[in-house]
Length: 191
Image (tube, rainbow, N blue to C red; front, top):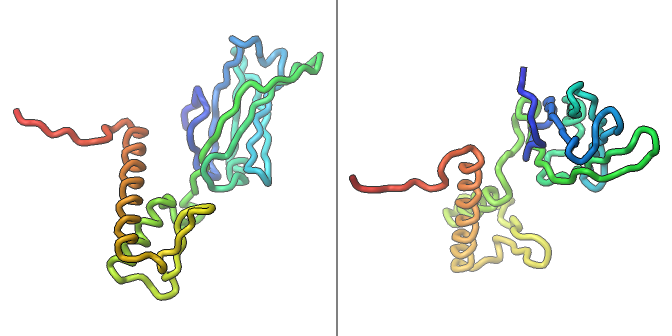
């Protein structure tokens, strides 16, 4: 049986069950007096989950597999926790944050789990090496007003974009290593 977490995790895998202890007693919010509801919203759809009384003064928030399956795979889905007094109706926002919903590869093994940075870096490398399919020759990078198309880049711009996305990808890998408790860089020394 999986462990019960003591804080909202940074990420969860879609279509899995996650249980979290929520302790708001230092704020005077206990399960005997308040109802605690977490709402997850991506801007178009929302999912609400009511935490239950754990019996020890803490709430137990259970995000079951059906709930997490209904959340879209994406970065930074905002959530808000609302506590409402069970008798007088006073309501408070007691927690806010964002969570990453990761794809569940059991249900969709074809899911491309590479980050945007890695996808762009791979496309740039394909153009530089001359192995990109003709149908992919107009792959776009960037967002908003800074959007560029690979087919329109000069060789110098291609190399510059490759270096830029290479640095971003290196930082991404370092953050992932740190998240896993590993050192971000190897340290070499002589003895």
